[in-house]
Length: 448
Ligand code: PA5
Image (cartoon, rainbow, N blue to C red):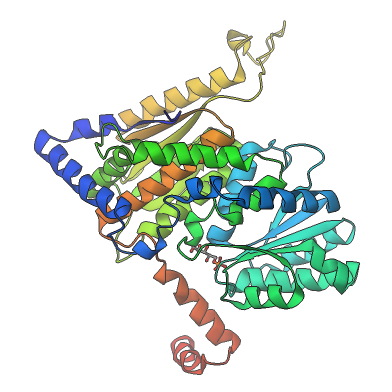
């Protein structure tokens, strides 16, 4: 049995038996499209059974060997990538790390990220930092042609080669990309970088359990086998039934689609732990990029409580009634810390003295749930007993599977992202990329 628990069933109290039956029928159809691979985008379903396949292969061993090599030679590792080639990695590493370091043990390097923006100051500051550190690069791009990581990698490669010499620099670069296509693959072959493959049938935002996530996560000192075992367990559980009161992914997919049909068009992902910020970012991309198309889809947003109760909390409680929340609760923290008793009680907090900080956080969550429910905001709760590799593996797979079922329920292809091209084409035209002359004329007519 998996350890993850979803409580979305109270959402179904809002509908009568007939509507509930329709929901179950819709779920049955989408569920079978997903696992029978008969729906739209079915050539991108390699992630469904990926954990089992990886556990049965030599890949974990190969990744751990490469991770060790990188650890030994680096104080810092720069992970270069954007979107699905970056967010899952960062989500897992930050969720498992100390809040103040991006690694598990002191003998593992600090991890920093590049290629996820085009900020000159960010890249300048990065190169300044790397002047004084021993470092390596993991460059990740499935297409191998994405501008942001390609640009950052060009700068970093230059810097690395100047620092270590071309011959030594090549041993400090690992490329994760397509098995044959793209500029990065060509460059990696020419320069002789160690390379790992992103499977053809796994799209970016579903790729965290491929080398895209596994290598940096292993390198940060975490147990990738446990992560995969968690995902594998969740896959087995989700494959047993599409009953939406039994299958947590079907329950979540049904609840969010029901709310969307009821004009709740914004879903806010809520976490109560600051180191889950990037898990929220990954979740937003997963659902937002998968479902936001054909002028449909839930807009995905996120908040971190209690921090954001002092900013967006007001809107959620009292603003336009178009939102619902999905709250992720991590039941037990990794460490123990109690509220101290102080004689003078100047801050008047002695009433909570000797309580664990986590109990205070839990009461904040419960208080918020009651207030938001009273304020007309439906809430779906997801509980993990604690944060560790295994439970996180379950959670990642659970979200990916839900997203597939939910996207099919909505009637879209959850595995493509045609809308992402629009800004890129304009940017290329504006920068004068060969082949974009017509587009450039069209844009200039619009803006002059
Ligand atoms: O989910 C996706 O497919 C995208 O977010 C991609 O991961 C992102 O655009 C980066 O693409 P690539 O890995 O080809 O550089």
